[in-house]
Length: 242
Image (cartoon, rainbow, N blue to C red; front, top):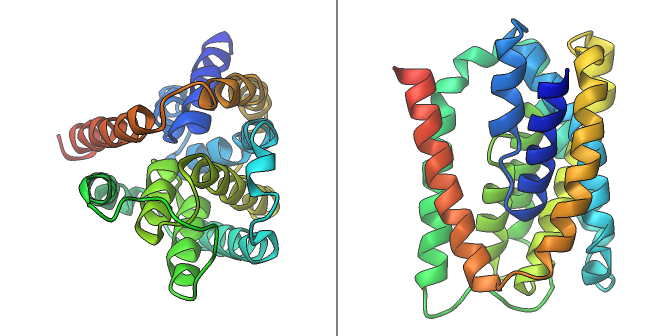
């Protein structure tokens, strides 16, 4: 259990900074012999306190943002994604994960290199609804590299400043993760003994990550997210294909 606490602490920090906390917790749960669907469900439910603590540290960045719209998107998308996981075998989805992570990482890098930039006014335009909803759905279904996906989407939409995009990422991740609690709990997929330990580590790690977030150069952090996404993609290629 101490190993789970350590991995979840790193996961909480990673989720606050870039995303991809599942990179740490999912292998730890699978190593305990927990089935893949239960491992995904447990990791998602346990990550909720970490997202809360991380978002709380940066919540003021969304004071003038479209919170009601984001709330609907996060809860509905996360809840529907969790319902799909309950119905299907998550192991079949594993083979899509590295391709998706690679795609969103390349997409985010392309946006950073664009002369148009990746920042703009904090406005949720019509085309942003399906994109953010799909990200929330993915967060409820699997969630690996969710932060990279959300940063890519908000960057493409040029929705707010870099820190505001991080706040959106954390807020939607918090809602999607929260929505899964009800679905996964009723389905019996959650491994609660390990989940409580993970939640504690996520909570502490999220708070630490939120403090680091405001002290890191935005450009450096953005490229760190791209690098992290590439590494995460490579890891899952090796894990699921070899």
